[in-house]
Image 1: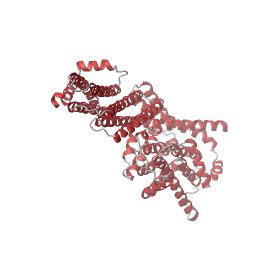
Image 2 (image 1 turned 90 degrees about the horizontal axis):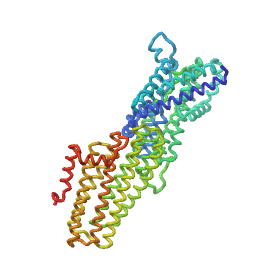
Image 3 (image 1 turned 180 degrees about the vertical axis):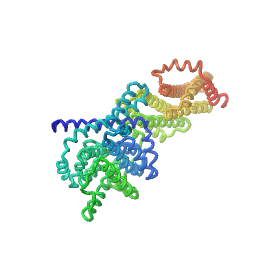
Image 4 (image 1 turned 135 degrees about the horizontal axis):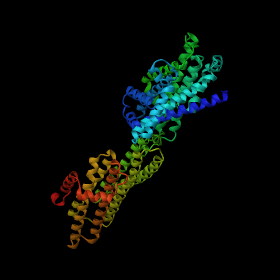
Length: 597
C-alpha cells in the first residue's frame, strides 16, 4: 500500500476512534440519567471529595472536556460554587488519563490463552459490535438501547485504534526515520505546540495521547521520553480550548471556572517542565533517551496529573483568587445574581435528560412567581399597597420573560436526539409554561379589580371578605400542589389536585348564589357585586389551569399517547377511586362555608 493510502486509512481510523469515543461518552451520559450532574453539584464542599468524584465522572464519560464544560454550566446556573469547581477540575485531569490505559489493550497480541485473545482489540471489538447492534435492533426499551450504544461505541473505538495502528505501522517501521522526526520534538516549545495543536484539532487530550501511543507502539521503541514528554505536556494545555470557548457568553463565575481549568493545567505544566529540564541539565534522567511504549505513555500521563493535583491541593484558594483577579467585578457592581433563566444553559443540551431537569426547575420557578402574585393580589383587597403592586408587576414581567426563554429553550431541546419519554416530557413542559403564565395573568386581573375598588373607595362587607379568604386559601393550596407536582412528579400529589379543583368549583358556585341573594336583598351594591363575581371567575379559572397541569403531568407519568381530558374528568367524577373520594371529603370539610362559619 502506498504512503498516500496509508495516511488516508490512518485518518479514517482516527475518525472511527473519535466517533467511538463520542458514542461511548454519549451512551454513558444517557445511562447516568443526569446523575453525574447531580453528584458534581453536591460534592463540592470538600476538596478531596470533589477531586475523587471529578476523576470518577471523567473516567466514566471518557472526557475531561465534557466534565469541565458541565462544571462551567453548573457554575453558570448557580448550582455550583467557584471553590467547588476547583477540585472537580483537578479530578477531571486524573480521570481523563484512564482512556490511555484502555488504549494499552491495542498492544495485546495473539496468544494461546483464551482470555488474552478475548481482550485482543480485534476480537473484542467484534464481540462488542455484535452484542451492541443486537441490543439496539431487538430491544424496545430505551435504557437497553443505551447499553447497546455504549457497547457499539467501544467496538468502534477499538476498530479505529486497530485501523490506525495497522496503517501507521508501515509509515514508522524504520526506527531511524522515527527518531529523526521525533528528535525535532525534543525541543520543548515545538513538542508542546504539537501537543496543543493536535488536541485542539481532535478536541480531546485523550485522542491526542492515543495517537502518540499508537505511533510509539508501532515504532519499536523509537519514540523517546525526551520527545514524548513535551507532547504530553502540550495536550494538557490544548484541552483547555473548548471550555474557554464554551464560557465566552456565560456569567463571570462561569468564565472564572474556565480560567481555573486553564491556570491549573498551564501552571502545572510549566512547573513540571521546569523541574524535569532542571534535573536533566544538572543531574540527568537515566530514562531520558530510552524508548517510550504505549504503556509507558499511559503511566506517565497518569503520574503527571496525580503529582500536579497533589501539589495544587493546598493552593486551591490561590487558583480561585487568580481567576477572580483576571475576571474582575466592576466598581460598584454587585456579584452575579443567578436567575432561573441561567439554568437554561445550552451546554446541557448535549445531555437532554439534564436539560429537561433544568427546564422543569425553571417552570417550577414560574409557578412560584405566579403563586406569590396571587397571594399578593389577595392582600390588596384588605390593604391596597402601591409598593406591593410594583412587586407584582415586576414578577409578572419575570413570568413573561421566563415563558419566552423556556419556550425558546424547549424548541432547541426538541431538535436534539430525544427518546420517547424525553419527547413526551418536552411536550408537557410546553403546556405547563402556558398554564403557569395564565395563572399569573389572572392574578394581575385580581390586582386590577382591587385597583378599581381602591379608586372608587368601595369595599366588600366583612362577610364577603371572609368568604373570599376561604376561596383564596383553597386556590393558594391548589397552586402549591401544582408547583409540587411539577417539581416531584409525585402521583400522590397529582391525584390531590382534581378533588381540590372540584371543591373550588362547588365553592365558587355556592358563593355566586349567596352573593346574588345579597344583591337582590339590597345588602350589596350592584357595582360592588360585579367585582365580587369577577374575582370568583378569575379564581375559578386559576383552579382550572392547575387541573390542566395535573392532567398533563399524569399523561407524562402514565405514558399515555394522548389523554382525553373531558372523558378522563367525567370518569373520575362519576367513578373516582376511593382515594379520590377521600380527598374530596377532606377538602370539602376544610373549605366548607358552614363548617368554617
